[in-house]
Picture (cartoon, rainbow, N blue to C red):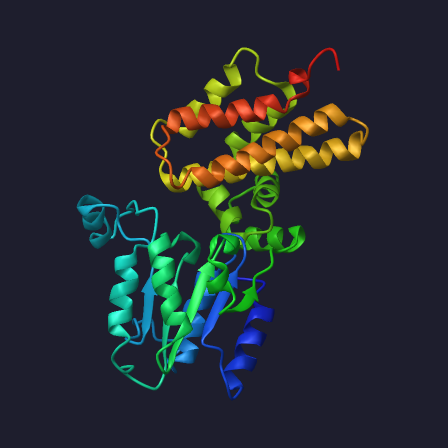
Length: 324
C-alpha cells in the first residue's frame, strides 16, 4: 500500500539522523491509519543501516505490540490467521525488552525499539518504560507510535521529540483511494473519505469492511430518529452478531464521523438551531466517552451497538422536546 503525507516527518527524521546528537526517543503522533507504524519501521531500518530493499527482520529492531489474548489466538497468529489481541501492552513485555538492552547491538552501533501503540501501555508498563527513557542504553533509540498521545504519561511525552502526522485533505485522499481501490465507485469513496477524517488507513478500512450500508443507516437515524427501533434493529443486523474489536472500533469511529458531518450540515443550514445543535454535541461527546471505554470494558457487542444507535437517535430533530 502506498502512503502519502510523510514528507515533513521524513525531512525532520533525516535532518536529525545527519546531526551530531540524534534524540534518543521519538513520539510519532497522529490519528489511527496515517501510516505511523510503516514510517517507524522504515525509519528504524535507516537508523540501523539496514538495506531498504531487504524484507528480512533486522536483529537490532525490536517491536513491542499487543500480544494474542490467549493460547488459542496465539496458534492462529502462528498459522498466519487473523487473531484477537490483548487490550494492553504488558509490563512483562517491557521487562523482557529491557533485559535484551543489557547487551550490545548485534550488527552495528545502533538499535531501535518500536512500541505500537504506546498509548496502550498498561500503567506499570509505562512506569517501567520511563526508566529506560530516563537512562537510555548507549546506541538505543525509541520510537513510540501513539494514536492518542494524551494518554501517555506526561513524563514520557516530555522525554520524546514529537513527530506529528497530519491527515490528508479530501481531494488527495480521494485520489489515493481511487488508485488503491479502483473497484469502489465515487459515492462509496466519498463516504469513506468523509468517515475517515483524512486517514488513508481508516478510509481503506471503511471500504474493506463494507461500512457503506452502516454509514447510510446511521445518517438516517440521526436525521429521522428511530421511535419504533426499526432502524436500530437494522443497524444491529448489519453489524453482525459477533463483531471483533477492530470492527467495533471502526463502527464507533464511523458513528462519530456521522455526527460530526451532521453538526457541520446543521451549522451551515441554520446557525440559530440551538436545541438541535446541543443534542448533536451531547451525543458526539457521549460517543467519544463510549469509544474511550470500549477497549477496556467487556461490553456485550449487541448492547453496545444498540447504545450507539440510541445515541445517534437522541441527536435527531424528532427527539427534541416539543416545549422548547
